[in-house]
Image 1 (cartoon, rainbow, N blue to C red):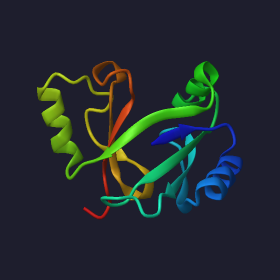
Image 2 (cartoon, one colour):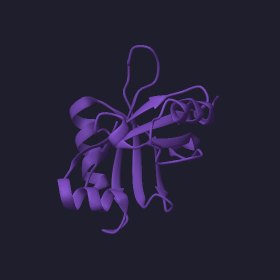
Image 3 (tube, rainbow, N blue to C red):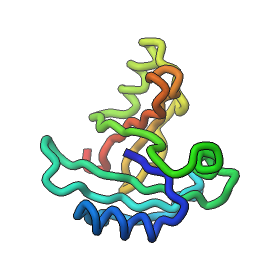
Length: 133
């Protein structure tokens, strides 16, 4: 789950202290216009789960515009897939509108792609192929 925040350091402190999450990584992604922290959810059933905190690098970025119009909160939800390119092709064939036609770089070295909210019940949806695959 990706959460838009105004102050990344404050949000990291909040989520780690309240929920016992641990920081798996931090990075700045210039292409996406964010500073981010990936927080690992310990003991998540069925494998690794993360909360991604996103601070915009400026007001004219996707997360910056999101914060201006909606404020802090859930920005997107992500699902792990074995092969993000194959998943995109399958979803396109099913008529799903894509934000990304090809995978791009995501957090922790993952390959990611987004689906348009209008095709997925109003929710910005991310496909995530782990770097370890």
